[in-house]
Length: 256
Image 1 (cartoon, rainbow, N blue to C red):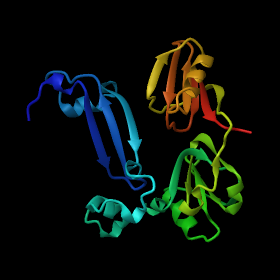
Image 2: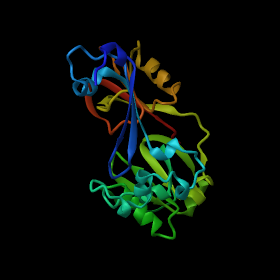
Image 3: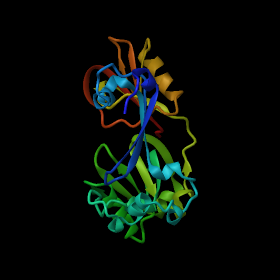
């Protein structure tokens, strides 16, 4: 195949890759054209070559109210729903119980706990919850690898923003819980920062201006502000923060 470098100035890649939990799709927009003589593989792996990468669960590419059993009847979707039937040897036969839940990414559900466990694979939480008649869902704290199982007392609480959490609910209970109506706030710590990939970096004059920019941006859930550079870094799904000299971080959360 031959192509001109200018043909790839705006190039989108859909990367459908296998992983146990969950299968995901990355949509990447490349903005810097490939250099003459550079291999396309090397070009695609350069951090500077793309402007945004956003992971999207295949479930979210379909109508929200579509029952799991009515998902498209392709081999890949059937393999996801019935992993033991797929001929692909790379797919683990476990890791799909979470498909029986509705997923609320970036939302915590405080209270109503009926049990807690540490996890290696988050799907272990789904298996345990579905096997417990008292469990209506669970929240995973991905920063601390903890799973909090929820009983019906959690129905009186509200979903709250927190970037470390994702809540998985059995469908019959998911919409009996309301989202917290309070506006989010930015909760910061000096000398701390995220080493995750920032989807946006801007020159901004102050920490307060950086956090205000995050509050106004629905995709933003956390920031680093590096005062020496006047640099504001925005994150949509950050990993756990750590010590970072010259940085001040903030989380977008709803708190009491």
